[in-house]
Amino acid sequence: MIATPVWNPAIWAARVQPMNARTNCARIGMAQILNNYFQDSINCLANRRADGLAPIDQAAHALTAAWPGAGPLSALIDARVTAVLNACSSWLTNRRFLGFRVTGWREAAIAALYWQTAWCYSCDNYARRAILAIGVNNGLNVATTATEPVLVAQLIGNPYQFAGSGYAHQNVPGLLRGDSRGPDTIANVSNGFQPRTVIYGAYQPWFDGHNTATPSTTNDQQLAINAAKAAAGPGGSPAGILPAWLNGVLTGLAPLGANRRGFVYELGNLGALNSTRLLAAPLGREHIFLAIPPAAITRWWVVLSNSHTVGPFPFPAAALAPAMGVAYSGNPNVLA
Figure 1 (cartoon, one colour):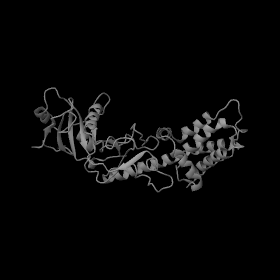
Figure 2: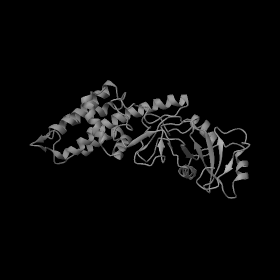
Figure 3: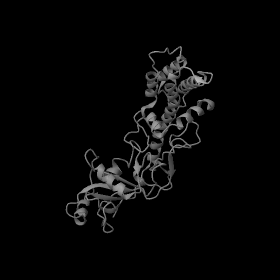
Figure 4: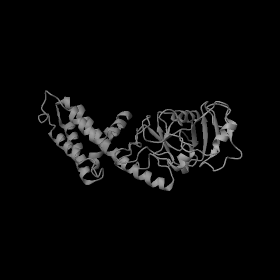
């Protein structure tokens, strides 16, 4: 474990950075930010040793050689991260004369290395623990929240949960998910709504309004319907094998020319779990979980090309067509 007096100033230097800078740093990872330091600190008219960079260079090279190793909370990685943070902090504190920065042309690269090393260390720990949490929770058929992998009280930190993080965590009823995949695929093949990969090194559960690897939901029916239609477009995932009775239901209820376009799923079994959203975004627009197994889903609708819907149907899909309770929506972008 990195000592608190070393760690706290560094992680708070990271936390005050803009959200997009923090997210980009997490996505490129430790190896790349170390490489960036050596590139960004080059000055053809200056000598690195004379400018006091030798301790930082040595510590950064040592961390590069060891990373990822056993990751955060391992003795080797912790010692080498500590060395980088101490070397950067010492340079940023001591390279002054009469209050002015000496060799200030190096400052931006060193300040960036300081906060980015702490942030990547924290995020790497989060990703490792998120993978474990998803595995456990999928086995229990419960969703994994963004606050679960690392508790807020833990020193190493949760990238989504600290004062000024820019995220809110709350229970929101009526969450929906629009998707191109049919109910049998969601139930039996996709295991609900999961990240594309949960393999360490490829898994990047970072969300700042441009979602890439965290399943998103909404309580806005129009957004869910439009998401289903878009997902079913070119490059979308195939619907898979659909219930044998569905074509008959659609033929009987849908007007001529309204072809099946996608599906909307109701996540009515999330219980009291908190989703995560951007604090600046309206409540309900987009809420994320790290993983949502099929047990969270209660009902589903078929989305048609004219933005009307047919349903609801119970989830998982029954073997026989429902005898009643199926409707064609009277208004587009509103669930039946």
